[in-house]
Length: 160
Image 1 (tube, rainbow, N blue to C red):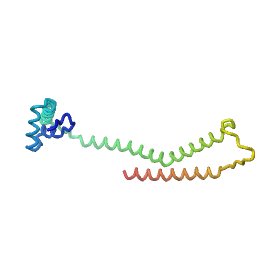
Image 2: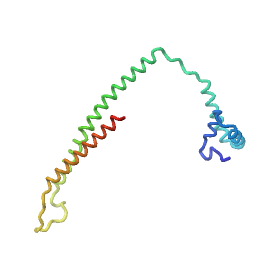
Image 3: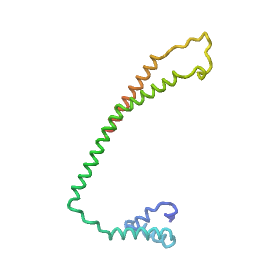
Image 4: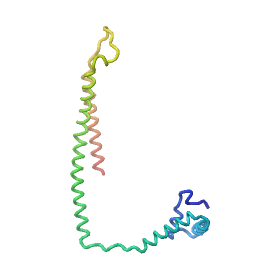
């Protein structure tokens, strides 16, 4: 028999200490315990735990236990509902606004770059086109994508 302690497979030892191991395996495990001090110590400790659990008596439930429990549940549910509404509003409005703000900041940084840091100079015969309408169109597409994403996130949150 392979040593359960060395192989980190202590399921048989746990079952033996709980008295739930089938007789054939229990006999083989008992034989192993005679030769292996680590496994026998493990089983002794588990049997001590089972003995302590068998002797433990739960305290009596107070008469107003249910009332206090339901009161605490209602208090926590009220807090959770407030946060849930805030989270929904944040996802619905805050995420697209944050994305738009990031796009505006990025556009400002790009437009304020100094000519020295712009890289190599363009030859005089080259014409540079201004693509602002396309940039606005991409920004609107991004906002629509974020709106769709927040709608999907709300649907997922409602399913939970």
